[in-house]
Length: 307
Ligand SMILES: Cc1cc2nc3c(=O)[nH]c(=O)nc-3n(C[C@H](O)[C@H](O)[C@H](O)COP(=O)(O)OP(=O)(O)OC[C@H]3O[C@@H](n4cnc5c(N)ncnc54)[C@H](O)[C@@H]3O)c2cc1C
Image (tube, rainbow, N blue to C red; front, side):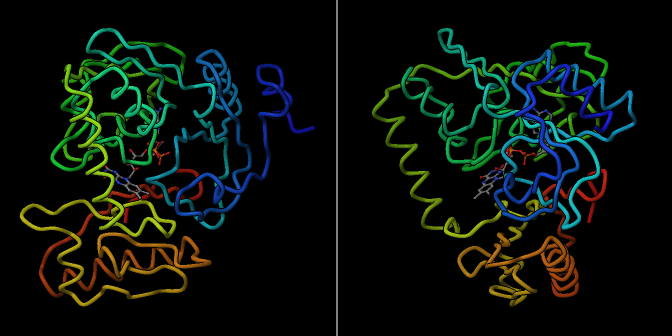
């Protein structure tokens, strides 16, 4: 048996160690080839051990949340995917503060905020990611962003050392955080919300969800808005003006409903999406002189790449 598997079996139950796991099953794009190794991680101790084993054996490793901002290459990943999902979802509410493990979904956190009459989370409740992914991305919508509500995060370095980062120390900017430039793992985060009227909070969450349903192509697999908002413009507007709505390469298509989204219209490969991203960047650059920068993270071979 593979030495890495043998070592992982010493720290994780067998059934949570998978090989050649198709990553299409773990991304909202429904695209992505196999990961050589894939582990479901359920505690900080397991995470620490799994990362140590990966480092000692020179195996690349990658943290996966809900895969909602990720394009994985068709060849997959030559390393170990550590999935913080089930078993990584504990939440504590203390007055107007919520502390949650990074695997908890933003929709679950939205329900918990509402149950406790806590206002200020509605902007995030419809984003289909995990708390860890939202902190990493400084996710935001409808005028709010994680930066507005984050107090601190408990973080682990690859050597197992854990420490707390304050909001300021996370260097949160527009879809930016310090985590995008370090190999730190977000274990949990604390949010500060404010007491509010549950009926109003409920109405706002429903209104924002309704706006998503009416404006976004939620009926197709995607990773949300592909490009960051260029200063002074909207990516979707520029793409539409460039006449690219509905443009398709292979199975990847610029959504007819929202030009900021690329959808998997059926059988799209990662290469189709990459080609469409590049084509869109070229056409928009030629038409308007604006450079579109992807918000989407692209995992190819052993690392994240930039387009
Ligand atoms: C239909 C749709 C609508 C969307 N709408 C929005 C929106 O309104 N606003 C918005 O900002 N985004 C939106 N997104 C994008 C996406 O949901 C967010 O970026 C989300 O925060 C990603 O979280 P995730 O758990 O899916 O992260 P993943 O896609 O799993 O990972 C993204 C990155 O975060 C890293 N990461 C994840 N968890 C951790 C952790 N615990 N520690 C360290 N690194 C970690 C990963 O390594 C990866 O590099 C949308 C996506 C879809 C499909």
